[in-house]
Image 1 (cartoon, one colour):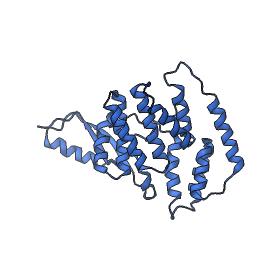
Image 2 (image 1 turned 90 degrees about the vertical axis):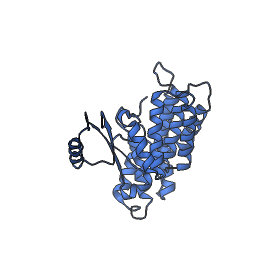
Image 3 (image 1 turned 45 degrees about the horizontal axis):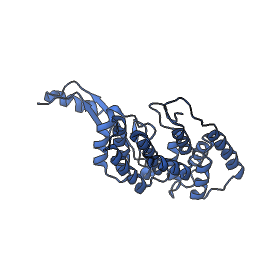
Image 4 (image 1 turned 180 degrees about the vertical axis):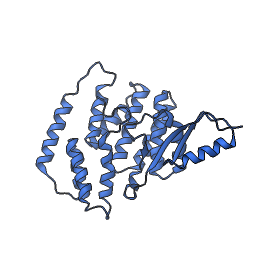
Length: 258
């Protein structure tokens, strides 16, 4: 089961930003945002998340809607079976639990797999990354996000592969944005931007800090391929080109300077 195709972030991840906006005084009665959030919840049959939203935002609770979505969740979870795919069934279940906003069950499953020393280092890292996404999605809990980053570093140092190391840079960059360490976030994004594949967490084109969602702050990341910047006139030409695009972090490749 793949909840995110390559280059596409799961749609449910955007709901966290909408929920945050609705928690702000200037947006709490915004009808359009309410409709976007509710429609996203219905589309994903997000029964647990619907309950959380109603509690946090003071919405009227629709018991029938909740029961219908809960039944859909139970039906889907009952169909996960072991197969010959490369993804283990527990990870399929975990991805689905995350997609419906079942924070408690997803956290318990991810924690159990992280603590399972019989699993490979990379599988345990996948569980840690899931713990990070759970904390990020449910209120941008920087304390839990930080714990996940520390655990990931401990495992990566013991033998994580290139993919896991690259993912950790992207995850840590998002954490740095959340705690407003923009300088280190930029360094991490530049290191991983050319081989970015953490689409399950954030779009390649930009990364938002949910705590700044109400102010529409967004970090735009891009790459620029250039054969050489050896001559001063080449640098001047690059500066002219940069004025025509929107960017905050730019990764340069194939650069030579004397």
